[in-house]
Image 1 (cartoon, rainbow, N blue to C red):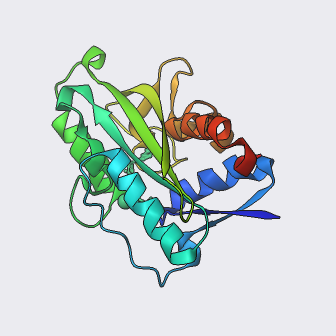
Image 2 (image 1 turned 180 degrees about the vertical axis):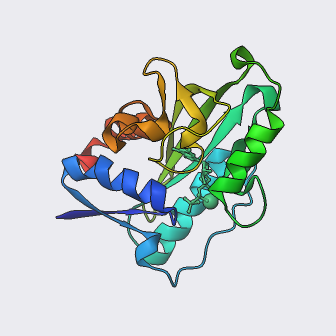
Length: 198
Ligand SMILES: O=c1[nH]c(=O)c2ncn([C@@H]3O[C@H](COP(=O)(O)OP(=O)(O)OP(=O)(O)O)[C@@H](O)[C@H]3O)c2[nH]1
Ligand SMILES: [Mg+2]
């Protein structure tokens, strides 16, 4: 079976990539399979910079093609926060529960129509000796006033999708991937990397 290395240590992302690549005949390995690898410091100011940092670090270390995902939640009423800092919005330790609480606190009193937001995903593909390539995907939604559903990860329980009338955490993994920022970015990757992905 063909293998693809996804340069992430995030369990939620890892599961989504596993189900996204399985139909393409790929076995997914992630940094969770290499716990000895140190986390790359995300020093970039943009999703693109951080995705490239993570992809190149992994492909240089393992000498294989690596795909990294840098993503986050941009809330209009908070001027685009938490943005590139989504994983650590409530503090240095990544904590989804605390991040959600902080978002809901900061949006207290903001009416429904002003709670617009989007998820962004930049995927970077690094092949040793070649120029790193990036693609992006976005998913529009609204921030709820309470958590709904227990699927997904991160901010999924407070991210409402208007067309489906539910949060991302109330969808199956397949339903989420069909409309998500990550799913859309991967669709673009399939177009630009047909030889590798297909
Ligand atoms: O509800 C969510 N549904 C999603 O689909 C999603 N995608 C991203 N996010 C948030 O944005 C951070 C990414 O930060 P990030 O790209 O640096 O990843 P990370 O640090 O968690 O892992 P790694 O891939 O860097 O190892 C994550 O932690 C989450 O808080 C999501 N939240
Ligand atoms: Mg990270």
